[in-house]
Length: 91
Image (tube, rainbow, N blue to C red; front, side, top):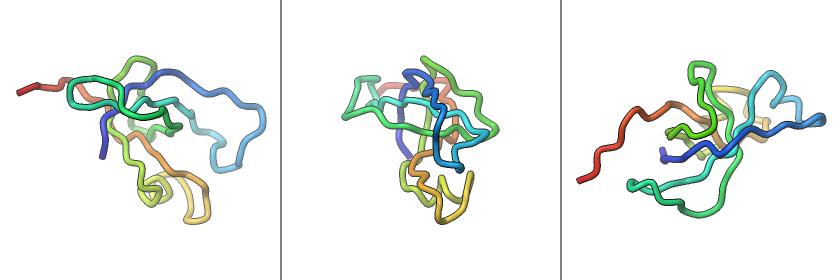
């Protein structure tokens, strides 16, 4: 699991069928201090999460989690948002 900040939504008229009925969000990976790390990725929130732009989220990028939660083993899903972070405590 990793930390990220939702930067925005993706809108597309043509997409793989596994993305139908799912929102696709742009997530910027961050470190424990809130600093950007690496390049932004595309991720799909689980049904229970209502993540949106500006939210700090926990996401999994192993593909298998995304496929188990949202699709089938043949779907090209690689990242899924599994929770919204309420607070990060720095030591």
